[in-house]
Image 1 (cartoon, rainbow, N blue to C red):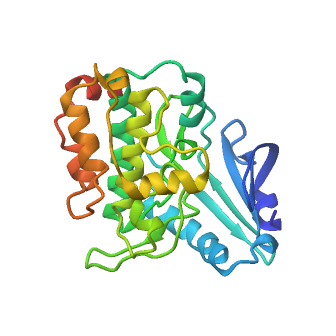
Image 2 (cartoon, rainbow, N blue to C red; image 1 turned 90 degrees about the vertical axis):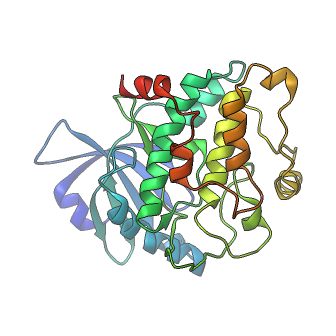
Length: 280
């Protein structure tokens, strides 16, 4: 990690690891007791030009989207020839992936699912208003802080777009959650995030079963490209028509008919019960 960072922060134990970066718990020497997260990226591992570009954008994008209560806040950035160090809010509760794994045999109620989906969509809508598409919405990147507030994290795959029609390119994302237009190699817009969020909503309500399953990545991609959305009776018999309607609008293969983030938030499925639970 960079020498500039070491002058300001005390770095403690490792709490996570990715392809290029390691995440540590840390605290400022001026505010002992307030723990933060440090993502330290070794730039020597970035041999691919696409990876280099993504890492270069990450801190800039985090600066742009900070200030929303459901987006992980960036605190400091330090860089030298070898390392890029990003200091951010610490989210030390289990992420959504862990919650889904621990509840594999139990479905979330609609109120519980809406209480997760609403702040997630608020975070996505905030990013889209800023001209940023996350491009890798998945349970692993949905964190919770010590007060159980949802925080959208990991902008390593994010990109800029403009509202005048400039599209994005590149195959990024994660099996099960990636949108079909990304896999098909076409240019695409920010609604790829809506597709991914729709998959998360489906998984929450189905007890962990994805809408487009497969045993291998190629099988999953084929299912996503077909986009044949179904609601098996044995799983969805008790799910409301409003929830199914919203899922159809989020998981529409026709991007022009797919809802925007603001339209999702305005859907009647997000009733007062979910908003009350969110405020608790």
